[in-house]
Image (cartoon, rainbow, N blue to C red):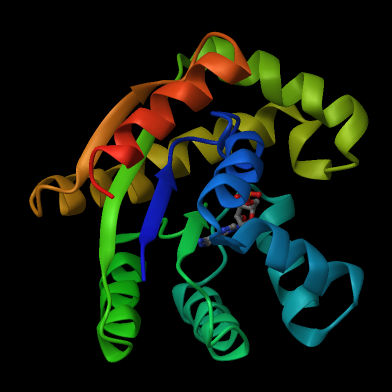
Amino acid sequence: MFNLVLFGPPGSGKGTQSDHLVARYGLKHLSTGNLLRKEIADQTPLGLEAKRYIDAGQLVPDAVVIGMVGAYFDQNPDAAGFLFDGFPRTVAQAEALDELLSQRQTSIARVLALEVTEEELVKRLLNRGKTSGRTDDTDESVIRKRFSVYTQETSPVADYYQNKGKFQSIPGEGTVEGISEALCQAIDAVR
Ligand code: AMP
């Protein structure tokens, strides 16, 4: 298996870039944000619980997210590999992911982090909010809250992978195609 993490703050382009990468490398796209929004749309108990956190710009509790990822693995036993998008977002999630992967005799090959300035991120998110129907993208105070959560809880995940020699930054501003090309070069170098 070949597993990648696409890392970066909200609005850095993880979702956009994922579509191309999963098609090119034959990976399964695992976006915890998408899985949570599906639970909300289906009005499951998990979705109802998650919605409170998402609307407030906070992280959904680790146990909920880790359980969901474990279930997704079980549902996709034949996957050639996974592209993780928006997960892991805490060090506890990163440790749980390592454990889940090692149970399947595999691991993370590389963590690619999209670097974008905060000013550009706010602009992109407010723009996305006009069409995405995502309530967490329309309110600038919720967007700012998500950035502060990112700095406090998610940035340490970068150090976690840096210490394992798996972390690589990629400039996340420019054309979609240019950024995609940079990601592919980084992937091809370790594949
Ligand atoms: P995203 O679509 O990745 O931006 O996620 C939207 C929202 O879902 C986040 O602001 C969190 O509230 C929640 N969420 C998504 N992924 C995770 C995760 N790995 N851990 C905790 N909360 C998450």
